[in-house]
Length: 374
Ligand SMILES: O=c1ccn([C@@H]2O[C@H](COP(=O)(O)OP(=O)(O)O[C@H]3OC[C@@H](O)[C@H](O)[C@H]3O)[C@@H](O)[C@H]2O)c(=O)[nH]1
Image (cartoon, rainbow, N blue to C red; front, side, top):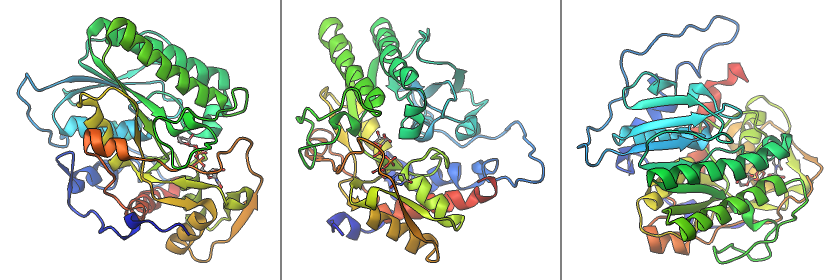
């Protein structure tokens, strides 16, 4: 087991994340605003139009931004939307609901600061905004491999459309890039200066190369047209509102353990990943958007696990009776991955504050709430 100081960090209890109390965030995905997600199957599901919304900050008009979040109904996007809304901004979500769900943002539907548009970023979007967080793209390997051409179109044409929007409106745009641009890395841990090791025709290429061209486009528009771009490279992230069926390792293992099924370790489980809790990522994205730094920044938690030891820790926490079984390794699966976050510390003063254990406990609680739906 690779030990890290991070595992011995005290857990975050009521610390404000981006000036928002954790308890206030929790009520949106575990508490009173999450009841539709935690519904019971077999009966009926009733919906009411909300007359009361979570309280949001009242910002002076000069500080209130009009923020577009593409992919805002997805796992990461919806947590970002929660934060931006609670901070008092006006938020427009554009999502095609391929992997996102309305239920992830349902607690904001009807709020005067909130708009939800069913929109695919492959088509241009005409809105007036100050900031764009461009997240739209399936991120789970089974999802992005489901329709590789569509994944490439989403990354490439979607990013061209959003950069064009940023150019017209003079909005600042943050591109959600990925650790996958490093491919199967030969440098470990991965620094932003590493150019990567990607198979351009492999099954992951639609996503890896899609995000690489998205980065190239971002700097093309920045250098040629003066568009203000920010680029974060997101490492493996988990938390409540992950789609339980999206096939990524954290949701798979937790759901399998909760259902008493075998935990499916691929290829012997010697490959490593480093897992960050979603609130840390959102902290980093907002800090980067509001910083003056325009080069790529890794956002991830360096706490590195082999997949085999990760399976054991989930089993021990969720269901010690569950068994672990080995399945074939998907092709081109990176053998190791761990972010070097020196740059993030230096340029935006960011580092993860949640331990993996605390994040996993919250995620387990969330999935337990939906067990009847699984
Ligand atoms: O059930 C499973 C699922 C996955 N795995 C393994 O666990 C590791 C992590 O797999 P995931 O599918 O969660 O994520 P990957 O690291 O392959 O890709 C991720 O990289 C970073 C992000 O940009 C994306 O969310 C995603 O593409 C891989 O080695 C995979 O083979 C299992 O052993 N069992």
